[in-house]
Image (cartoon, rainbow, N blue to C red):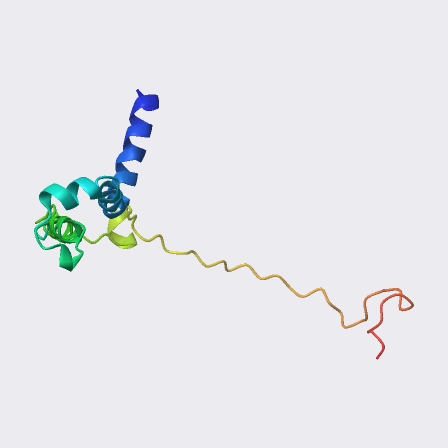
Amino acid sequence: MRLIAAPILILLIIVQSFSQWLVIGAFKINQSYIAKNTCENRYRPQLKCNGNCVLMKKLKQQEQEEQNGPATLKLDAPLLILSSRSFFATTPEVPIRSCNYFFPLTNSGSPVDRAFSFFHPPRA
């Protein structure tokens, strides 16, 4: 089913996109017939219309059809705004228990034993 539907949809999109060029192409193919039989100015050869009046009418008609095409779909649904506070479930706040334990400082103020040959600030 996908093998059939995909090329058809692609073809329809291409035809819709290039519809103006298709009208011009059909006119160029049938220009001699249009100039002899359907042109409004076929009895006045001094105008040298060659069926361009018919082409302009068809292009204008196609443009009006595109403008008057399907109306935009309007939905009358109420606007619903979800925020992170209203969307997620909330739990009651749990009070943080303070710790009353005392940890005495073990630093006696003496320097830490490090190898000074290796630990030094960078030289400029």
